[in-house]
Image 1: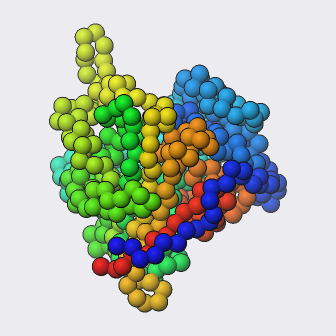
Image 2: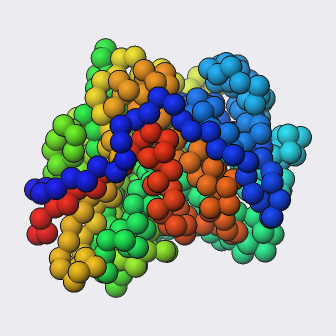
Image 3: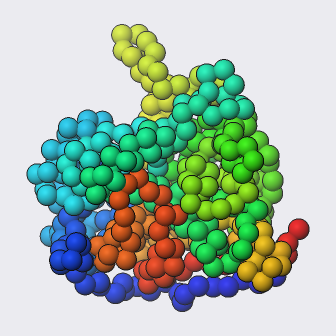
Length: 434
C-alpha cells in the first residue's frame, strides 16, 4: 500500500536541550503550572517536563496526596511540588491555582472532571489545557443517527467569556486528540490543496503479560469512547452518529505493527478538525481488535458500563467504577507490556500539484524505549509529551491565543519541529491513492 516513508528528525536523544525564559505580554516570565492528576498520564508528564527549562514551578496535585508525592519523587528537581486537590470541585481547583499563582492549569484526569477543572481555571485567571473535552450525552430518541450534546459543547459554549477575559483554553492537546489534530492542520497547510477525508487511525501491537484483558489506558475513558455512539462529520451533513464499532476496516500500521481492524468510536478529533480544517469528511477509527470489542459488548449487555450508582447491600456503587477497580492500573503495566503504539492521521484528497494524494502522518512509540528512558509505559508517555510541548510553545510566545481553541487553531510546524527536538520524531507515509 505504501510507496515511500519520510522520517522526520533523527533518532531519539537521551538529552533534551534546555530552553530559555518565556516571553508573555512583552515581558519575561516563567510559567507556573498546576498539573491536576497524578495517574498514568500525569505521572508521565513529570519526567518529560523535568528535562525542560520553560517553567518555574510545576505543582502536581491529586485527590490522593500520596500519588502526587510519588509522581514528584520520580525526579530530583525542586521545581516540582506535590499538593492535594478535589478535581470534582471547581472552587478547590481555583483555590489551589491561586495559592500557587498558577499561570496555567493542565488537566490530566478522567474527562468527567473536565468542567470543574475548566471552570476552576477560569475563576483563578489561569490558562487551561486538557487532553479530553467535556462529556457527550446521546440524542434522547435517535442516538445512532443524531448527535445530542457533543464532546466539548459545554466548553465551546463559553468560548466568548474566555476570549473576552483574554484567557486561553487549549482543549484536546494530548496525542489523540492533540497530535492527530496537528497532523490534520499540517496536511491542510503543507500537503493538500483539497482534503476529501481527514481520518484519525490509531492502532498498536501492545501485549500485557499475565492478563487476558488489561487496557493500556483508563478503562473509564475507554468505555466512554467505545460504547457511546461514534460521531462522523461530513461537509454536506454536518455531525451525525452511527452504532458503536461501525464501518470496520483493516488498516496497515507502520513499524512492524501490521494490519489491525479499526472501527468507528466517539472521539474529539471529529468535533475539532472541521472547525479549523477545510475537509469533506472527518472520522476517527480505533484498532481495538475482535476480543477487546467482544469484552466491551459484554460489559454493555450486563449494564456494567453504567455510571449511575446502584444499591449493593448497604452501599451504593457505580458499575463502571467497579470495573475500573477490578482492572490493573494502566500506569503500573509498563514492565509487563511489550510492543509499539501508533497514533496518526490518514489524509486523502488533492495535493498541492493538483494530483490525487494519500498520506498517513504518524507517531510511533516503543514501550521498551519509554520504560528504559522514563520508566513509564508507551501509551501514557505518548499522551503526556504533547501538552508539555504545547506549554513550551506557549511559554515562548510561539503559540498564543484567547478563547476555547483546539490544536488546529495553531501553526502546526513549530509543534512538529519541537517534537523532533524532544527526541520523538514523527513520520510521513505516502500511499498510492485509491
